[in-house]
Length: 396
Image (cartoon, rainbow, N blue to C red; front, side, top):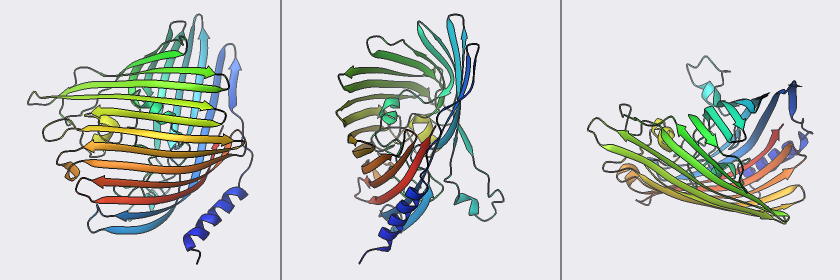
């Protein structure tokens, strides 16, 4: 007998096809006298059905949950400014990221702000460009694992959720491959220099606002250093992209003990004749599991154990094939974390994804995705979550 879940999924897909309409092009609001001002935006929504088998929680919980949520990349609107001033090109960007995943939170008892949605300002920076390169001042995504995530083939998809991370219900976002392949490059205040393109190579090196990795009272007398070296080259009808990135920071606690945060990331992506292959990875110490030294501590996850910094490493392997308007993606990512006594020892987080992206036009895409996430502790306890996501993305 056909299951109700199948009919729910089919109904969501039919509704998705019914609402598909041509999208708007990019918008230039002002372009005069060497001054330009443009606006861009991205919108997405998914019907999601998750089935979780959770042996980590006590008591054990097995449940199916249907949601209407946004995907891995949140909805946003961005404003861009540029002005030519002699030999210098001055620019700036501000982007405001909005969640539609807070619907469930607004129905809690005692919450009188049922229609209030938070706005997350992930980018707010100015730039100075010249023949010698670019300097960025302000808030932007970090450099460590930056290309690992931005070149993820399912960036515009949905990705993993789990009850262990509090992501299944409406209040939390999906995590894509964060925590099972790479660490999220948390937006951070920074001063970053980017070199000009030299035979396909570009270097970025930045001083970032350091994180209190050793607790709220820790001392950081130097900024965090992050860098990324990228290489891009066209090869006939194909392309090759390679990158390495780096992070280092030191903190001190009252006892005088030093806590060092460091990480090294790398990756390679090649595309030819419709086929694509992406492989990336990282090794880190004192950087946590999900969102780096600042993000993990704010989530209540440690980056320092009882005796030493917590080690983590991961990799992501993806294959894709594009035929006409359709793009097929197969993806597998894994992260291992050595938590010592936390989470009953070591932790392993894996995500397997199959996705289909269909381009209605240059701005509108339909997405169908099946995702399996497994979080396993060294004790053998684990949570396995199977997710079907059907959605649409619209960008201008």
